[in-house]
Length: 94
Image 1: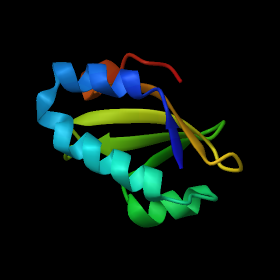
Image 2: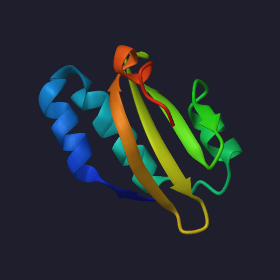
Image 3: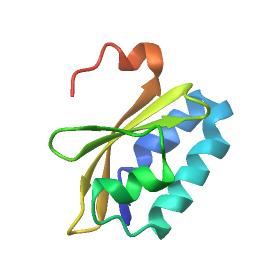
């Protein structure tokens, strides 16, 4: 998969360095993935959540952080929409 918006991830890691390893693992697994449908993601990430419009929410670093992406399955593209803490997530609308 191709990931768009790397800058957003780098900015997040600067603020939350404790999440660096978890984010890097997610990044590597994602670029190596070949997700064709939500079921493919759920097989690897059991705690993932799905919203309409191909929005996927990943729990990062033991559920301390949330990563929200939009996936274009046919184009094999993952767009980073938002990343932050659970408290920040609760204030978001997707």
